[in-house]
Image (cartoon, rainbow, N blue to C red):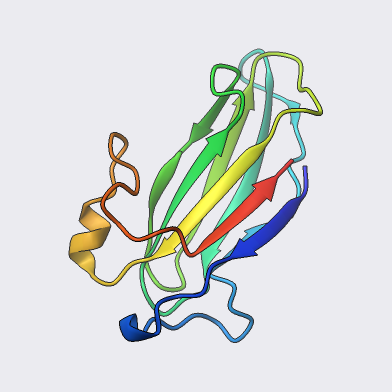
Length: 135
């Protein structure tokens, strides 16, 4: 599965800064590589996210097949320069039509970071700063 990035320009009044390339997150590897799980049936893949921004960044994974895939953690907040490993699990056949979307948003302060949870996601925040399509 590969990644493509779609950027939305941050509001200049917010004074948010990102890395020189304007990338908010680094995703590695750039593709999902599913392998057989050693501990249970199914296939697993992992990707690492790294915050390249000087501000906290919220992220959320979405898929067009939510009953088929389990993503852990599905959303969260990364402090500047923080990294996290994301695990994706599938118990069924992986279809070429299956898609993932990783949305991320540069957060203004700790209060915005606390407002991101599994029920509301990014509700009440401005539009995501970047979206990455994963396959």
